Structure formats: C-alpha cells, structure tokens
Length: 171
Ligand code: SF4
Image (cartoon, rainbow, N blue to C red):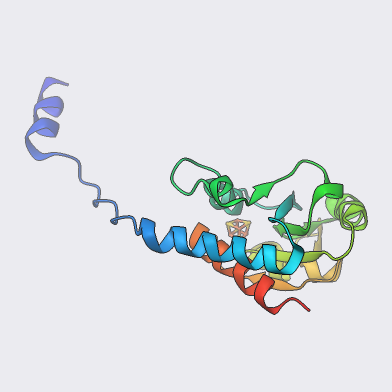
C-alpha cells in the first residue's frame, strides 16, 4: 500500500488533463439561445424533459446544463416540473412500451406553440435498443419531432446549439 501511495505521489495521475473551458464561446451560445427565445416567444425558454427509456447517459449531459459550469439559468433557460409551463419537450431514449402513454400525455399537456426535441441516437430510431420487445420505437413514432440531436450521448454544447437552431428555424 505504501509503495502504491509513493508511486502515486511520484508519478501523478495517469488521466489526461481536462480540456480548457471555452467559457466565452459557451456563454455567447447560451445568450444566443435566450435572445432567440425572447424574439420568438417574448420571454425565456422553459423545457420539460421526459426520459422515455434511456440508459441515463443522455440525462447526465442534460443535467450538466444546470451544473455550476454551464449554469444555464443565468441565461434564463430553465427546466420546469410541469408540462403546462413548458415550451419545449426534450425526450431521450427509445420510447419503451411502458413510457409511451406518459410521453403522449406530457406532449398533450404542453400548450401550443410547442416543440419536441429528440435527444440521442436512441431517441432518433430506438438506437441499440430498437429490436427489444419492450421498445415502441423512436420518439417520432409516438409524437411529432421538430429536431433531432444525434450522438451517444450529445454533449451540452451540442444540446445548446440544437436549441438555438430550433428557435431560429421555428415556424
Ligand atoms: S443515445 Fe447513448 S447515452 Fe443516450 S440513451 Fe441511448 S445509449 Fe444511452
């Protein structure tokens, strides 16, 4: 044990250094999303999220949007608990048969205008779970989808860029 500790002190960790954060670029991206939301809706953006059967990898990236580094709330973007307060529905995972009804009800409860974003490869078409007996399919097989953000999982910056593209192109 002592040998391991001494080796650790002498050589340091074997992990790669974390990439330098591009905080200015990230902040500008988040501000752009907020500006687009205000231009489109007259206020900031509220998001309701549904995990329709994901492995939670996509959720880790979505949760990161609210952590101290990304801190989306400082730009007026926030996740809401009730679909009745939401503008955007984000969905992850293949839609499992057990979650189909819950997803439909959440979609119906969001007032118009509303947009749906399918996040992650599984949400696009079921991904690696597509052939499972428990899976209904991708999100588009259950509710209309306005934007898909592929990746396994997509990172927070890709999520922000997707939100921005949605708002800029929303009819
Ligand atoms: S896209 Fe990847 S990370 Fe997201 S739910 Fe599917 S397997 Fe998990």
